[in-house]
Every structure is written in structure tokens, then in C-alpha cells.
Image 1: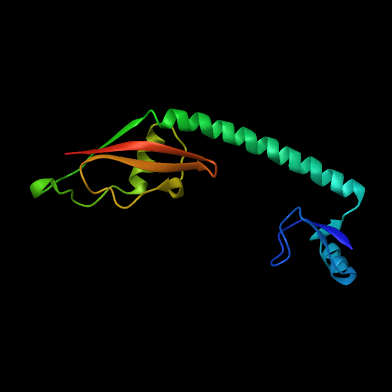
Image 2 (image 1 turned 90 degrees about the vertical axis):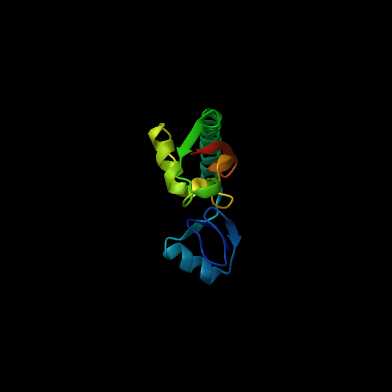
Length: 145
């Protein structure tokens, strides 16, 4: 029996996958509203749904590209306290970077900031911001006394 999954099922497949399963298991999944029979109409609906998702994904990527171009032009500067021999007290965290970006008008989550270690020395550092799986912006952060 061929079925189309309506949700992810562990060790079987993801939502939208077309599987060939035994009749009893297929009937169980259909009765449990986790799958539908893979007839022509349902396959056509799945294809339309996948096309819509693809178009939305492309639009999202274009929007993220625009944000990437704007964000890479920003110059972010942190004034930090330093001790003897210009050693920075503490370090700049992703939370601090996000708060600055939010003040500048960007809606970015803390989890999107990818730090390569701590920002604990004076000078310019490059930090990656993952706006989308396929779009990563690199911003320059300058630490000054």
C-alpha cells in the first residue's frame, strides 16, 4: 500500500514522503490521521503544496539576502573596560551583540549569532550571523577602550 505521510514518523519518514508499507500498518496510519492513501489526487495536492513551499522558501532567501547586505554594512563598536596591558575584563557575548542589532532595527535571535570563541581582545572581530540555512552574514565588531 502506498501512503503519503502527514507528519514525521520516527524511523519511517518525514512529512510529505511517499512510502510503500504493508496494508495493516498503512491502515493504522490512515486511521490515526498520520497518513493518506497515495492516489492521484493526493499526490497532485502534495506536489502543489511542495511548489508553494519552494516559492515561499525562495522569497525568504531573497529577503534574508537583502538583510545580509544591509547588516554587513553596519559598524558595531563596543566600549569595554580594560586593565593592565590592555586586557579586556570579561568578553562580549552573543546576547550583547543581539541587543545592539535589535536597537539598529534588525530582528535577530541570539541563536543565530555564531561566535568563534570569546570576543575578549581589543580590535576588530568578524562574527557570523545565520539569517537562514543558506544565508550567512559576516559583521565586523570593534572592541575599543
